[in-house]
Amino acid sequence: RLTRGLGPHAIVWCQSPLRLGDMSEPEPDIAVVRARTDAYMTALPGPEDVHLVIEVADTSLTWDLGVKVPLYARHGIPETWVIDAATRQTRVFRSAGEGRYAEERLLGPADALSCTGVVSEAGVPLAFSLAELLPTV
Image (cartoon, rainbow, N blue to C red; front, side, top):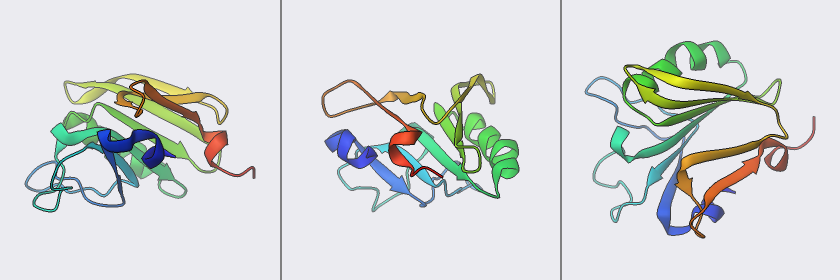
């Protein structure tokens, strides 16, 4: 859904590392990074390239919320979503600054998810609900 909606504006980066510093290369489940002519063949995406990070937590919820989200905030990733596979809820973190996110929202599976920094091929924010993407459990 992300790949089809983005067109040439961005790349969906799946389970691949981001370079957040000399000693930090986390591998988020999904990252939406700005399009680049070399498709990151010569260097990994850095914080300035990332629009959105998505972590899908089954057994890793505590790690994702306690370690990875603060790491992304410290490096200025503008938006991070943590999808709790058990409850089908998404925690949306926005406005990274001073090492933390200023905004946190909890959304249910039917609520609209959209990222302010990710626009569709039509030029509008890409939006969808988790219920549209995941089968009913």
